[in-house]
Image (cartoon, rainbow, N blue to C red; front, side, top):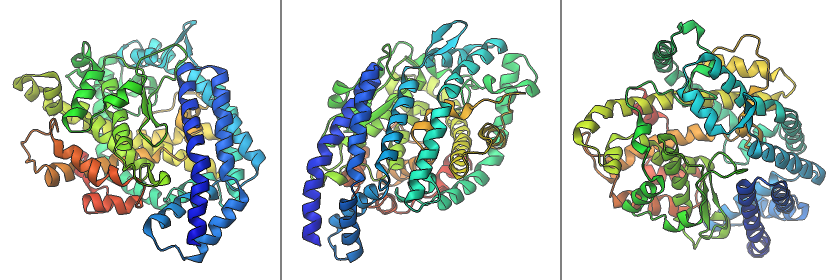
Length: 535
């Protein structure tokens, strides 16, 4: 059995490694160009890639090896577990597989190239965000918010077809629905995650209600309306997934004339996580037809790591740069001697945690001081505001994540229910935002993750929990920093050493709970998140 597994791995890697590289390159190129032919090429390669894992004979061999319980070497056990799960999730009809890929690519192209129409002209996401952030005209705000939702109606029919196809495929493998299947094959249990979300709901709901009241008071005064008149378009965001800028300090002003690329390079270099090679291959500024969001992609698991951004000189994009290059340094410092299948992050939420750990620095007064050479007096003036801004942003995000997680779970359990009503029921319960009177549109479909990255969003909140766990571990145990010490992390080589040697380096060699315990001394817990943002 061991010899058969080793032989299988050799053949497997000879097929999969190169094809995955081609898929990643094609997807990246399509994100840059927005051209239909590039998306078609990406979709064709993705289908070819997925067909590998649909092979029934390969899966039968993996099942036999797994059930024999004869593989004793830890690295081979882990390799077998990961590859077996990949195949297990794709053992359904090839026709369904092809249809899922075709529709996914079609939707992806629509999201990537779509520009909302506002007042008779096409506008970018950045332009809509600017109106929602800056305007105090309720009519203009409503128009911009509604324009941002137009994409929902455009993709919704295809998205629901995709949901039903995913469910059909999952049910053919013995799962109740796709949501359950996705969790199971990604080392998670949907019911256990729901219990964790219930715990977070209890931890956050009272404090969130308080800050939501403060937000409403501020916005009503700013907009010169009564609090009872506040609508979703008044929260300076398309989905109220981040807190409005209600505090006196305007972080954007600090970055208006700054080189965000240089700032990012200098910081990571100061903690011994050099990103020069990563910056060289990345694409960081707006272009016509280019995907409007941001992401990091590991092209070949051998050092070709790229970040896509659409930079503007503001605090949001500064945070995005730190976030995305957090992903990138994780991938860069995985042990290159690990077998190919293990040369990746231990879990998707673990790489999110690293990205969030660094992305939060944009609210860190000590980091702003080091980065922007601010005077001590100014740092003193903005510290409390920065701390509150991060707290508000975290609690607002945690409630938004509750909406997405519970919506997806319910949608995959019953795609035929009134999803428009379900969406707003959850928004009103968890975000305390009122549904606009008479609104009956598929607003959930305006969120790209729900269509293209299913059963994924909960990992962002798990990542936030782990980011807080890392924060307290590195400040108290690795860097031995006291309460009043500078926590900018600038020039803290031990921080980069800790992450690269005691977390990144292991790749996917351990399960996520094992690795988190090795790296922080305990399994994932919400206690540090509560300590940082609630208590």
